[in-house]
Amino acid sequence: MANTTIGSSIVIEGEITSQEAVVVQGTVKGKIETSQSVFVENSATVEADVTGESVEVSGNVTGNVDAQTRVEIKAEGSMVGDVKSPRILIADGARYKGSIDMGQ
Image (cartoon, one colour):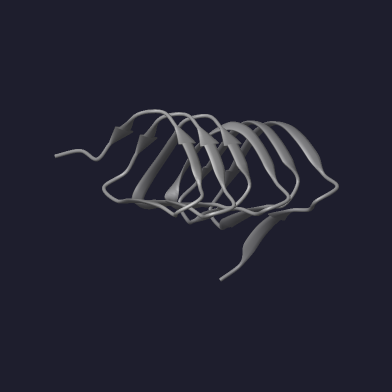
């Protein structure tokens, strides 16, 4: 499977739309939308609404997240925003502030 990777030295302001998994190592401000997974790595800062099949947060996310299958906030991850997903995993040590909508 191919990935769209935003490298650690890259800053993007705007909208990312992809049919591939998106790996963020740098900074994104705006919106991320993909039909695949989104990975926010340790070095990343995302100030954006994120939509994907699944979303994994190891870095910092400020914005709302909408995932079709699951959202996982790793121990080193930090997120401020609302989550909409049928499953959410928040690891011990992770930081989260927002509301959770797991549907019906």
